[in-house]
Length: 178
Length: 178
DNA sequence: GTCTATAAAGCGATAGAC
DNA sequence: GTCTATCGCTTTATAGAC
Picture 1 (cartoon, rainbow over the protein chains, first blue to last red):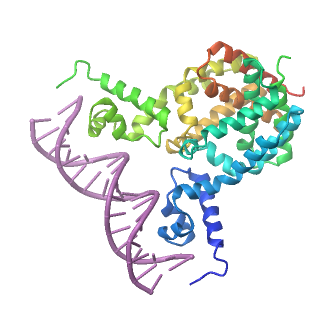
Picture 2: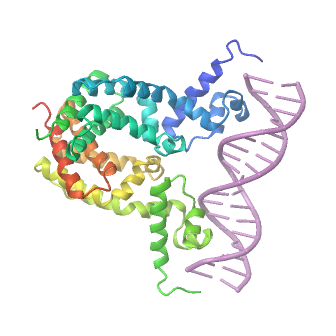
Picture 3: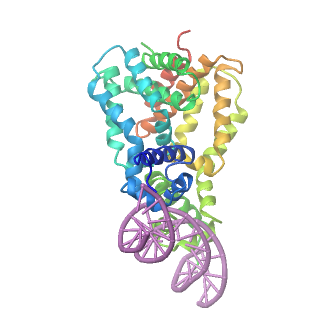
């Protein structure tokens, strides 16, 4: 039978996929599991997505789109603003972010390694400038890496509490010994 | 034909496995690939290891053993000593560490999630004490998380350079705003 | 200790009916 | 839009010869 709003199924597939990808890893989640959870059969998925990879890509896209926009639009400014805005972006997409962190091999699978490194590079350059010495780069890595870890580790806590403490610690790491 | 030192093969299997696990991910590495690289057949692996999981476990064990010993033997002390010693331990096992970070799903596969969280908990408690408020815990997470990120990101650089800058940034994060 | 051969299962994907 | 049926492939693992 035909559903009232056909494209609802597509969104429900993405929902279930995101949940299973997050809970048990992308590599360990099969199309059969996704379809069974939805009460449909595996081939039915192929009406909505060309391939398993296309489904995965569509789940990640909201994050990559926002990262792309962030890296493109950002101008140098106070580090605390940069770190705070980056925190907000990452916090908003923390589910997808945890999904990726738990299974980094999907980045190479989707040819996203280069873009990810480039975004991180952009953020670090905005924080410490293009000519900073290696020591400052390492400080920035502790700052950005530690901030990201907090998003994954404290995903269940109130955003504002985590943000305040994490950003102030990241700022301190950034300016360590100066 | 029989080899001169039979148990050499076991060590060579572990070497090749560690290299392939690191380069292309644990989940994406099959026993067929490992055996082909060694010039033997897949069933031959089963003479040396009971299962694929046993092989993976044996590759990770040097790290888990050292972490266990670290958590068991450590007493509270200056944070900079704790962070420096933790850096040394992690740096020594950075290959296996990168392997795990690239594919965190193996932690649950090997039922290691609980132990990993427990080690991290031990380290954080050694750093800030058992009764510290949430804000201090988040600072410690930035410190420990950022430090770990540096080991993975700067694995190719001289250990002493990375250690000095990473530990001083982690220390600053730990004491942020105090 | 290593081989050939094979079992048993799961995967992504497609064909074609309805 | 969803179904049944199936193809082609890969995986872990075992049996038994040498």
